[in-house]
Image 1 (cartoon, rainbow, N blue to C red):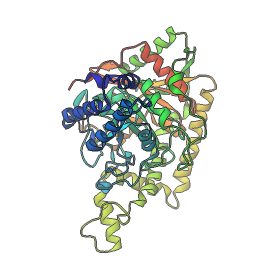
Image 2 (image 1 turned 120 degrees about the vertical axis):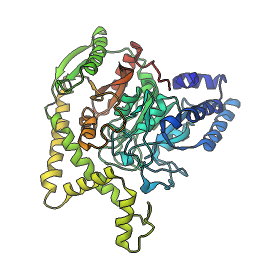
Image 3 (image 1 turned 90 degrees about the vertical axis):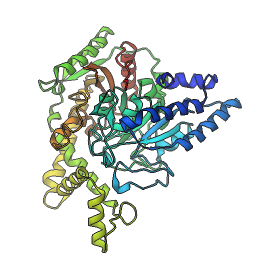
Length: 485
């Protein structure tokens, strides 16, 4: 539907000028879900009644001449690890299949206060444990460009929904690449914020020192609009930074500076698909035309990113998922008779294979006798990776890298090979270890499958990252092509 291809700013103008109503816009989103989601399986829950109720309230405000904000009346979806009061929040897991959240996550509360309309909760790998949404305990989300292929993960449902116009934007959650990688594979724009920029309160934790919530949208300007609303200090989350939240949208209008762009040699090795490298270099040439300086840089500890992440993140998930004891909440086995039975049988039935694998890896890494050898050493390497970035950003303003080593792969191709699946995040994980702001933007197609490019900036400098992404969009039509189911 053409109306759903418009930007948030364009939709705001049409709402305030009464060319369309919030109810019509919400119906368009819900109609798109009815039309396409039986093929894509992006949504776990659709909130039709509540969405139309909120839309009616926005229309009443407009009718009385009350001013509304940019996000009022704009339909969005949220990854199903984000708590939504009175609505099922499953984390893509059978353990929480019938769990109804008792409160809103901070990001949801802020968007609702702004008048945005939640239309549904999107599918994901259980607890974020995956890179293809094949580890959802309910169903596999399919790619809008080719339904025989994955949508990426773990925010695959959110990325597929935005790509197919089922809502205007989505909230995803990124631990090791779970916003950026599905955004790349589905041909949309996704931002992993700096750690501490956006509150994690109300997000079901995978790895607490990595998790970030961010927008998946059709453009950098839409990301800027959403981020302005959800970012900032939160009394419920003491990891949020007190920094003043910039007016990201206004900053996009400033003259584009001649920046220094770094190309890390570790991301452009012979292992990278030459066709993907070609697309990235085409984008680099556009910035050279604008007068930007491009230079090769090195991040020598990048080679340790995958093993470091897959020690630290499972260790944290082992601790975080211990709360799912089937007593306070969570699936409980029907034939459990003793306390031991409740723990063992319920967790065995409620957790999927990949979740169990990560709990076991994490518990092992934290165990007596192995803590120093594995977990502590991994934390030291994480510090070295951060220091690599600090050194590089003393000399350049942003880094350009691929988002994914490949385009969307066939469903089932990597499902039986955990290591191959873990390597799907090889280009995203180091930035997560360092807590840096990183956006994936569409930069072309290979055999009609989208390719994504990452733009990464200094810690808490989303402003520059968004400015670069917006500038790229202004000189290319790579993001204009839409899937056609």
